[in-house]
Length: 97
Ligand SMILES: C[C@H](O)[C@H](O)[C@H]1CNC2=NC(N)=NC(=O)C2=N1
Image (spheres, protein in one colour):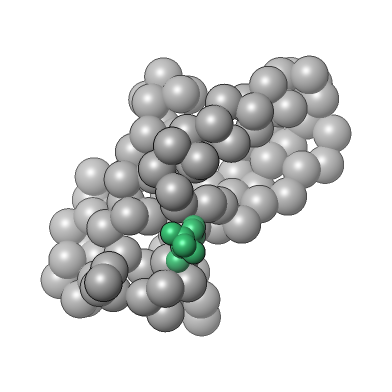
């Protein structure tokens, strides 16, 4: 059973994820990435999709042309968990950060 992060754990996690914002209403983290065009954005989404399947943890996201909006939260935990932190770190890795 995956546990929701405590406030202190969340603060620590966010320190390590400077590109991500905390969404208090959803108990989630969000990041928006703007690429040069749709092909770049969709190529990134394809990489994240493979990663998400491998990690069995899936983003809520949307794409408009060159922009990808990502929200990570753990439905099984009712909020942010270590699994979101791990997926966010892996996404940052794809982006070279
Ligand atoms: C059965 C399967 O492991 C679960 O439903 C996984 C799949 N992907 C998931 N993704 C996210 N974001 N939250 C979850 O709780 C979750 N649960």
